[in-house]
Length: 489
Image 1: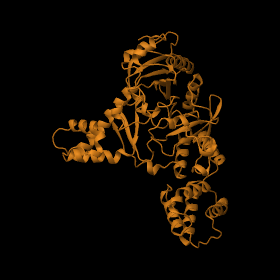
Image 2 (image 1 turned 120 degrees about the horizontal axis):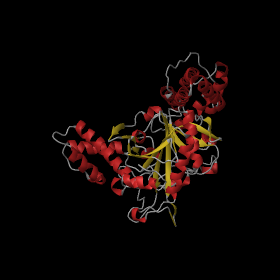
Image 3 (image 1 turned 135 degrees about the vertical axis):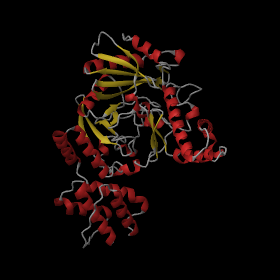
């Protein structure tokens, strides 16, 4: 048991250095860990040190020691590591107090950076795993292959809202998850914020898709929805955290996120490609002299409202929302409601710039047909081998999260192309990718050239998927939509 005791003391030292563990609490916390492990004694005559700034190595040492000593089985290591780190971290109240002090003295950027770093050091944000995910820029988009996230192809999972067994917590993002060992959330810490006069909270995502990816969650467990108050809450958020973007998923299955049962927004410290896209057209309305609306040069259908006047943003956003949710054009296969329910929804997302608030509104539809049972305005079947999951808020803004299986599959295809070999039977579903990458290559097919061509191909496919999601296939159609609201070029 000697190595178990030493590994516990190394964790204690790590917590003192990185997690704000006070010396006064060391014996109390150590005893809590011993209770958790079912140990009734402790003996360590060395002074263990841990100079690591992330928990990976010290947790591995602890898990290996406990498994080797028979304290717990290897498959239980994740649970016990989460539980022990929960003992070592500050309480939610203490975390909130430190955050608020940094917010007051250093500003929102430094406060959020501290909270993110604390979430990494506490092992809630699995940054070491995130850093292993392939990521590259391609064709104006950012493409990632997420090896930590399972691939969900069934949209009904979104409709269930990730409900939890036993009904407690009600879903995977309820505030009651904070510290709940039953879902390995002992290390989850949240920060209270006020949006639209309501109590919400912010937490970082354990398997974030981009820099400081997190969610703002309503304390009340109510379904996802978008209304006029949504625009107010989004602007409240960027007023508090102007270096972040924040957005709301469309509140319908197939085009929404994986949790539709609980109202929440997604955001973080990275400006995504859609926000950088230029305007194809700029429109104005005399009713809003201090605002413009841009038809965004983007594969999806997006209008961007720009103004320093919050009231103008709110009013225009509501006008666009109200028009779109009831908009019908059967020739374009846009049907707002039928026997299967509602089909039109928006995804608003906002950043704050020198121009004021820039709120982009993405027009979405989840209508299906016999030809496209997964959605007319969804990734079409020829692209499903690359991406069949919902095209949610993050992808719609130009950051594509592709399934982890692709890393090995695409590497095999690259090898076949580089060696001039035909596609194997087990990879036959990738025929489109194989053919198009091959056509991109001129001259010698080195592995590096093939790899770059594959990255170009993925970006191209993702752009075509975004085009599939566009409800208006030309920018002029989007202009005509806005003209009905009194906007002119």
